Amino acid sequence: MINMNNSQSERRARPALNLDMISSLPKDILDKILMCLPLRDAIQTSFLSRTWRHAWTSMPALLFIDDSIPSTGSNANFLSFVDRVLLLHNGPILKFHLVSSCCCEVAIDRWMLVLSRNGIQEFVFNSWYDERYKVPSTLFFCQELKHVGLSNCIFEPPQMFKGFSLLSSLKLNQTTLTDIGLENLVSSCPLLEILWLSNFNGCTHLKIHAPKLLALSIFGFFEDLHLQTPNLVVATLALDVKAGQHVASGTKSNLIQALSSIPAIKMLELGEYFVEYLAVGSLPEKLPTTFNCLRKLTVDIDLGVLEQTMAALCLFQNAPNLEELELWNFVGTCSKH
Image (cartoon, rainbow, N blue to C red):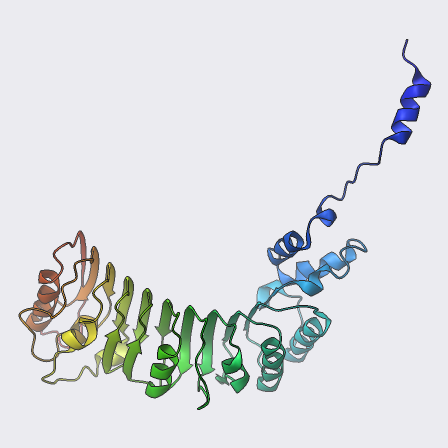
């Protein structure tokens, strides 16, 4: 016979099962869970329980993206929302993304000051506001930065700028900067591995000296390109449509100038108008560098122009281990058709 009294006593003595297992997780795990949520949802977890009330305020990543924050209705409300989040936040801010149509230079400068004091390591700014935002000097003194992505900005490093000693990734889109500004920026980032330049203006003579650079993407208007990237593995190089209308003639070999210092390249894509640029000047019978590591080559080329065909042939002859070749017939400005 079952003793009902003993069974009831055992149930009363058994500790209550903790149904809220998530709340008892370590703080770093909670932070990872919160960072997987849109910012508006992460903040709303404060209503779950007393344990969650202030959990979001120590998140190391704050991503202000238009479709992931509460509907603010106006630029002023958006700015107020960001201000309030930064005011309530407690702890380091390692990652900060601002992707929005709202923009106020004074407010962003204020936020940058807060970030510079909180160990920022990744900063992404993307605004499609009418006017370009001038990056404040405070950004250039954030020495913990490892990843930077800017769009629709004016990028002018101050004279006392010594570089980003830890920066490994730099992406600039629709950004205004000077030739010397770009050259000094890249050369003063000794750990830079990824560089992406797109639709830039203000610089036309690109000099990229980056010993540890592994991946490079350039699309924009430029007249000269000097690469000193001995460890570059993957590269995409293209001139935009406007640039193709201004491919200058000359006696120097653009092919040697642009590509003779990338001996480790494995995947190379030469996009719109770039072969037309390479064909300018006297073409050498043999390049000073042999691309022994090159396995895949993609080329946009106007096969009806002899100079472009010869430039491409020069590349083929200097890539003895090429395994994959893609040719796209691209009619450029010099086409005789």
